[in-house]
Length: 136
Length: 136
Image 1 (cartoon, rainbow over the protein chains, first blue to last red):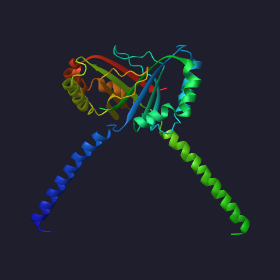
Image 2 (image 1 turned 90 degrees about the vertical axis):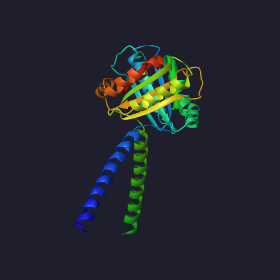
Image 3 (image 1 turned 45 degrees about the horizontal axis):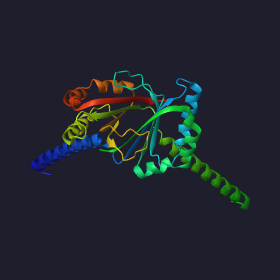
Image 4 (image 1 turned 30 degrees about the vertical axis):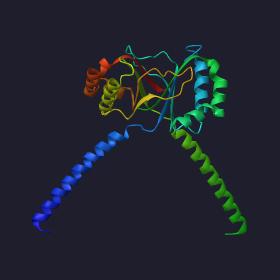
């Protein structure tokens, strides 16, 4: 390799490395976005608010519910300790279930495991709010 | 290998394969559960409900907001076409952001990118509800 072609090679390598860095940064950012997902988020308020036994029953029921095969990912949560005015911290349990699409979520609604959950646990809550979201 | 030891080897291999299947099934199920996560879910109602331009501005603002580095994953959504009584479909935009922990979410609240989002977009909505959840 001549001196000038080596210099050119180094310059090109530098450009390629820089381009690689930019691409990686773009990809890292984009991979954080969840796409082609059906977000099913349910908040439960217990009939006996603050009752540990009923809370335990509901959590155990959701654990069993999570076995529904069309659920791609799920999270069973409780209110965090954040407390600004716009934050609703009054619910007892958060149930977040991610599906590949609306058809999978629809089949979950009629899945025997889901029907059993409703049968066994619906007496525990007196309020439930569901938010279903798809890609905007 | 003698006939009996071969038989025993086959039996053991069968048991190991079955045990492997069971373990895999358990792991597959458990890996669906999101753990050690701070779930920040915000629902926005537009001041000019149904206004496409304002909706576009809010969506563009959230895209920019998603650059905050402590955000692990995010989803920008709109109401799905589900419509049972317990489902709230009245919001315009769903903003789901996942963090590793509460400290990361707290730092997001004061991140310059977040402050800029609030400055540029808060005039677009007249109602916002936030649900922050951690592992139950």
